[in-house]
Amino acid sequence: PSRPVIFSGMQPSSDSLHLGNYLGALVNWVALQDAYDPIYCVVDLHAITVQQDPEALRQNVRRTAAQYLAAGIDLDRSTLFVQSHVPAHAELAWVLGSMTGFGEASRMTQFKDKSAKQGSDATTVGLFTYPVLMAADILLYGTHLVPVGDDQRQHLELTRDLANRFNARYGETMVVPEALIGKESARIYDLQEPTAKMSKSAGSEAGLVKLLDEPSITAKKFRSAVTDTEREIRFDPASKPGISNLLGIYAAVTGKSIDALEREYAGRGYGDLKKELAELVVDTIAPIRARTLELMQDPAELDRLLAIGAEKASDRAERMLRDVYDRVGF
Ligand code: ADP
Ligand code: NA
Image (cartoon, rainbow, N blue to C red):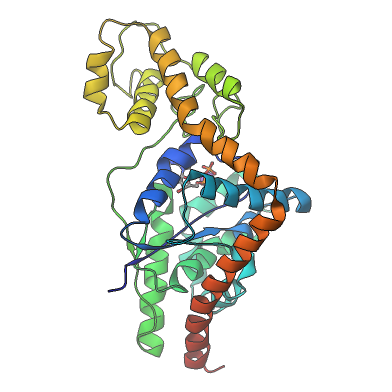
């Protein structure tokens, strides 16, 4: 019996993934390998919707793939590849874009937010049509389930609408994907601005915990994390966002419940919590960092693995694209 197909990807648009990417997505990706047929993609076509330095992009693609592998993505159970290596993504996106209403695309709130920050001349048509490319990514593989955060839900809805529209117009072709509702995945906040999501593109440098930071830097970031003027270690995101974020990270890293952590730290100081959490996080990510650096020592081998992944992905994607082209009348 074939396993349900899962598709997910991350952009290679920074020099390191961060703790939010790891605890909020990658840990889950690794766990899903047992029961699903996962397709994990380094989405470099998406990354160029904002300008990238070519050499930095090339390195970041390898580094992102290396971090996936170092975190436990297993090439026997998962397909791992780079989006631009499989031309069918851009090709299907064109077909789907031709079936997407301009008004429909204009309603995507992520584009509205991002382009408002950039201004209309700086923003790109690529950023506008990004959700259509995302739909192509998903629909090419007959994906059943997509692990999505809140910020991608609207894009998944568009994907479902496009799949249904294609099927209605041309006959049953596309699997209509669903959101994968797993166990509540961790949401990690900036250590310095704990009401903002930890993010490569927002928040503070000192509050961004990178997987590839040196362990001493990681420990320092936790020791300097913003807290509050009380003394009580208690989970209360509204009035104690800093401490609540530390407890959330602690729970995600150890699998302990927040309740258990509150009991464990009852009557103890913030300093203890920060110091112990720093050690736990370092113990968790230092091996991933070490393995990533090792993989990056041999770019030819990484490229070889990614070429195998691209071939596997291409076989599947091309099958769908040929069917689509045939139905469209090409
Ligand atoms: P960023 O916000 O840094 O740009 P992306 O949007 O590229 O990160 O997200 C890549 C993946 O990591 C997505 O699955 C997203 O849900 C997850 N993710 C990103 N930031 C966080 C966070 N702070 N907490 C939990 N998950 C996160
Ligand atoms: Na983002």
